[in-house]
Image 1 (cartoon, helix red, strand yellow):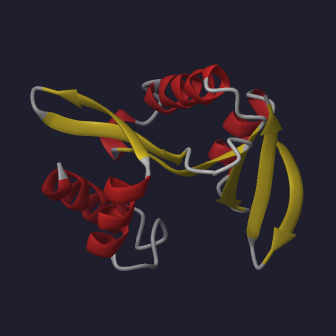
Image 2 (cartoon, helix red, strand yellow; image 1 turned 90 degrees about the vertical axis):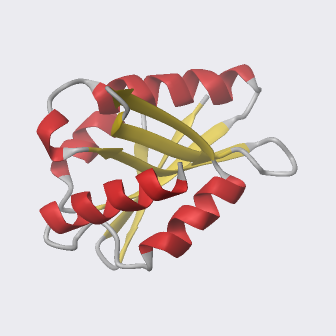
Image 3 (tube, one colour; image 1 turned 180 degrees about the vertical axis):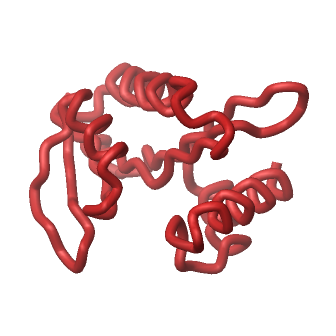
Amino acid sequence: MRGKLIDFLETLNNDLENSLLSVDIPSYVDKIIKCATIISISKESELKAFIAFYENDKNGETAYLTMIAVCKACWQSGYGKRLLEFSINEIRNKDYKLYRLEVKEDNFKAIKLYKKYGFISTSVENGVINMEKRL
C-alpha cells in the first residue's frame, strides 16, 4: 500500500502543480500508515481515491481529517463525498465529539463539500481555514 499511496500522491501533486503537498511525500505516507485510518477506493487494482483520518485522541473527543485525495480523472465521481460520509459515520460510531480539518482557503470545491456536511470555519491562518464539525 505504501508504494501505491506514494505514487498516487506524487502524481496528484504533479497534476496540481505541487499545490497539494509541500512536505516530503514518502515521509507523509509513512506517518499516515502508522497513525491514521486509511480508507481507499480502487478499480482494477489501481488506487483512485483515499481518505486518511486520525482517531487517536486519548480522550476520544476529537478526530482529525488529514487528507481526502481523488485522482484527477475521477473528479466529480462522488468518491470524495462517499469517503467523507464514511469517515463521519465511522468516528460518530466511536463516540467522538468533534471532527476537525484544515483546508487551503483557495480550495473552493473542498470547502463547499465540507460546509455541505456541517463543518464550520473556526479560524483562518496563513491561507489555511480551520474547520470543525460537532458530531
